[in-house]
Image 1 (cartoon, rainbow, N blue to C red):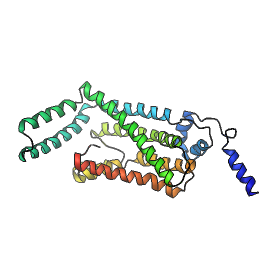
Image 2: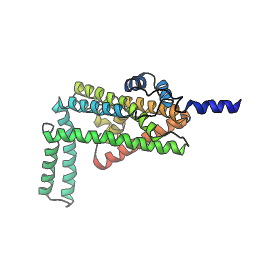
Image 3: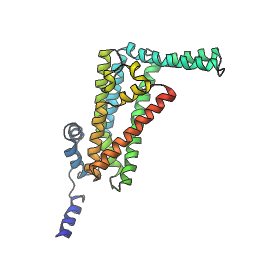
Length: 267
């Protein structure tokens, strides 16, 4: 009997037993409404690059978020002015210590002003390009980190399926980006759906505010969905899955804090 059951389980994953390929619409709607069922079906569907269309949609939504932010130049200018003021303070310290001259500091400030003018075409092109590169880089780096983690847990989940899970879940963070921009436009200040929405930046400090801003509701939702995907397709325990995904997120938050200390708040 045990041998028969094993043969049945093996036959479920043979090419003839696999379900037809899932549609992008079913995957996206399923990830938003019933991720467990969606990834369970994906696990027994014919292999495909299900991540391609979701990532293309993510890039489009990301572009829409940037476009919406450009509808209020004052909002971006406020952020750029904060960055410029931090740069000016650092340059003044370098002048006092003799590291640079006043002329060099002025040149550095003028260069930063040139590249951070929200009205300039260069700034807009750079914003779209850098954001696109960032999204793609995070997508593949996170997928690779999860793939390594799954191998440590001795899962046979393929890298393609890791990409499928992360790519489909990325739809959630992209939607969150649009919601955050909409709220920022209403409040006149860049905000995310996070604890940072309830406090002032001055009261939390740069590091604290950056970390709180990163604890975004849509990000948490996306990571929960990714965790579910790893359980359903990767056949690992719920504890291992959530530990891996949110452990990597904690590492990211630490990186944000260190980056803020060294380079100033950029998030």
